[in-house]
Image (cartoon, rainbow, N blue to C red):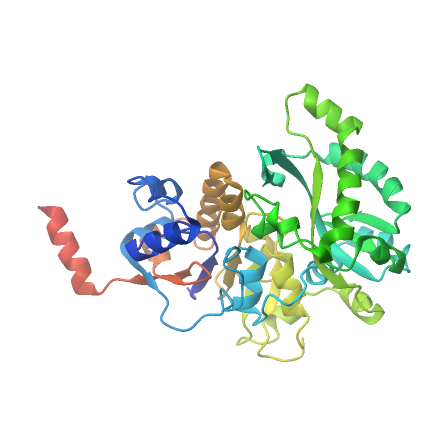
Length: 414
């Protein structure tokens, strides 16, 4: 069985090292964490699960990566060191935070979504694109906390009704709202729209989740966007979808978060995206070509933007969901035993939104994916030996020396 490499953002989101805890608390101006408070976000090592991932985590030691990583760019704001898209681009695509993300995600969606290609073709005057998601601004005494899509749980029917009306309202500003089959959403701007709302977007979504957003909306360069956003929020307040949600005591969609502004992809890029990225021929053309399986459209789009003819560039398979499925690899001609680098960001997104149940479910799904790679008769301990595990940023789980393992077993037997 070939080895499988796992880079799981949010695998261990809370600091374990004492100096990390004290530094984090001091920097954030918080009091020291209560004893064992961080144990809430520790999956499996002390739990009952017996899958390959949990077995590997229990049997290995966690330590900092020794090599220098670009996981958190040195120039990145102290207030935002955990945006998944920024972290992924820095670590795996060697791109700093100056790169826009919307075009990368859009290209990834265009590669598999014919309906989206048709919709975009009807708007030839679009010159820029942003990512957008419905959010809830939870008002406080002097600020508002941004609650994301996992908190809202917007149903497809709700979004379809809201999108249809919202597109009519946006037309006057030269803006169009598009939804991909993946569930990701985009705003397309004409040149007139950029004069109306400005050329600067909000910070990345990961920088805003569960944070006070007043400071993120400040600044003269965002003034036209703030004016437009205020009008949008007033429009959303009176929409029937929100009235119905309020009747059911569900949080209202009272704003949108817009980020990742990018120039509109060139025509040749859009045409190229209509071809299949992940054909069996590409996957099997070279036994030595690295292969990546990820849930991040931004990372997939960024990696695909590299020279595809370069044998050193990885072949990228973008998952259609937030959970890995072995069938997605098999359907593309990939043998379950092939070496694959799984790069998964969903656990960190769940952590940023405070979705503990979703965080556990995501890691359970990864564990189940690992089980499916090998015959059912293969023991989890044997499966665990084939794993290389890190958290995508600065921590790695390494095998213990055999003497340490023997020592632990002797003491456990007493």
